[in-house]
Image (cartoon, rainbow, N blue to C red; front, side, top):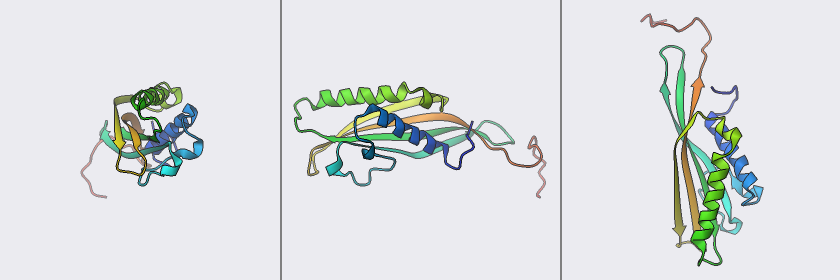
Length: 162
């Protein structure tokens, strides 16, 4: 059920992800951005970007709007390595810490009904000034959204234009 806020629920989920990322202590708090990585600040690596770029709603009822929504949440971790010999081991350890923090966070889990998918991608950017690794987590989160229009119950369609 939607909470009575003046913010999109998917943004509340994104904000909770930012808190979870702070709790991992992988980066200082001022390197966690609730935004899209339009430009990755190479002088502030490592850093996180977390966003909620989209959602999809499917009606569960006829009449009063009740939806099951699926929000897409994206968490991106950018870092560079001085020693690239064990970079994959370091990335695996970071992936584990982030994934475990998100999926074991009680407050986040009670905000959603289901996480039907969770994808992890690792990309290396060698065409930048520094060699940058990007860990990208994309997850779908389902939750219920109810809207309560004011007025008489919407229990049937009359076909009348008002």
